[in-house]
Image (spheres, helix red, strand yellow):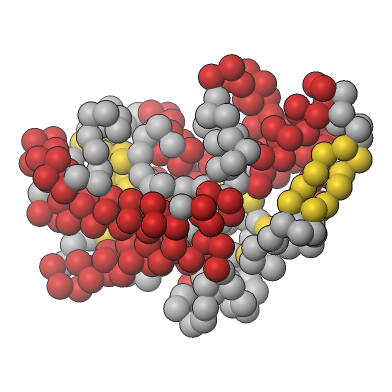
Length: 313
């Protein structure tokens, strides 16, 4: 991928896509192509095929997806399955047919079985049952991985698949009904502090453990692997360390400056007990993250304060 290569970032307005665009801009890549949802409906196969025939990108970052937390996945399973399958099928197929040199597909750590050994290794894929609260999204993402592998084997299409851990950072979704745990905690603690509240309620027991990666670190890894990885096997992208939801809540509380009490609602689902990524394959390829969680939280909260009037809330 050269500085003058034509590059299509699918999902450029999302958390991951916007970070990839920032990284490409910082790296001096001058021909980055983007399309808003109003310009191109990625669930429409005819529209996607026409776009690729017209734009003729050389490289594709497939970061477009319908995403959400436990509540969103549980409430709209058909939407998460259908929309993600359609996006992946359309973009990967049209990219191959249009002669794209390389495509990078972004999956998710939720593809792994609920009770897979920890840390999660790439070879644990399809070795057990999925977490019920997000299995629809996970099945769609697994299908995307397999589509990339199938097109590589049958057609020689250069498609690679990356599996990020839990992400956060600028551009995140802070809607309490649809967001993931970290942005939801930032908003809850901020609003409680602003209102002078005495307590903040956190879903679940606080015991599950999660790993978090700043989205700018992910974007850096995406560019690095677009340049340095050609394999069929999936690659985990993560920090390699985790913490409990209770520890995360305490850290967010401190960063935001909330002085009240944290209450855990054990009647709400915990989700997967632990989800730590084994990143030895990534490390062996020569890449490591650089933004620590405390530093990243402080940056993200500052971004939230500066953009809260126009956020997805």
